[in-house]
Length: 364
Length: 83
Image (cartoon, rainbow over all chains, first blue to last red; front, side, top):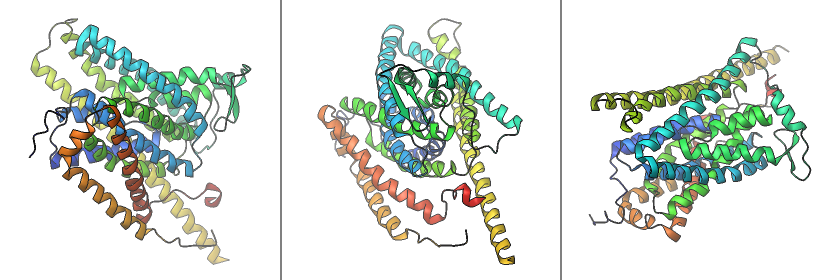
């Protein structure tokens, strides 16, 4: 074998187990992304790091699989009429700025407080944002479920969204088909920026992007989750190029994950045509809240590394890390399970209905 | 629903794109050392991973899309028809 280790010191050796593992995690991540517009990335980055891939290469390679995946997913969902390309691009551009700013903050924190400080910042962002947004999304889905309106195709536009849509700031108004209204880009810019910042911090911008499109702008859940794929494409393309300029993308890792995730994203996108809109919120909220616990477990580890609390023994750190990773994997697996189950039930209901129609017609 | 049109499944296209996809992945895994060296250079070489990602997504995306269609996993019919 040629010795090219120096040129690619960041790139690990791949064995069959690693390839199968990445393919499978990619598939499940893709399935969830196809359904809720994002997700999966928060598992893939730590999954690669657990194989010995350096953090930055893991982030870069993850991003390089994300944009082609989002592209295929958004094309598929556009066929179902769920994508608002204009809104996706407008939010995507401001999200790109958010990514750059978020990465800049990350670098500064790393410089000032080291690796543990940066990890603590990421985990704290995870916990706070997921608690607030995830809790809200899940509560809203729960209310819909309790009210018995789960069969509705139309969703109520929130008071906040109605207010946003009523504000007229001359020179900044743009019509978006998903909202069926003109809104000021002065509202979309900060939302996109926040999505990008979150993407740079915890790798899943959609946890802010999708809820903000639903609750702040007034987009239907299905269109919000589909449009998030356009944002992910714009953000991912720019981000990948930036990392690739520094030679950090391990194309093998990115393409192997892509192999699995393209199977998944097609299936997840198909799944959205079988479910009622509130299912998007259920899957998203559930994943967000479970992931929150996974990251919260790691907070004491980083705090002890920074000497903010008493030192935790190496054994306990290892145990906490394993449990945290396990919870994260189970969040994704549960999300995938809900998607597949909802899809299965939807298909069954449709087949039964079709069979009944054929039966009725044969009677006539 | 009265017209029960049976759509032809894209088996041929799936097999064709599947073979190209397998070929691309075989190339990727057999040329790892070379790829790591060139793609890891950075700078203007940044275009390489981006172009590769687009190429793989086009070929493999088309294959995976047809894969589910051939298996019979397709989008729900429009609700109006279902009713």
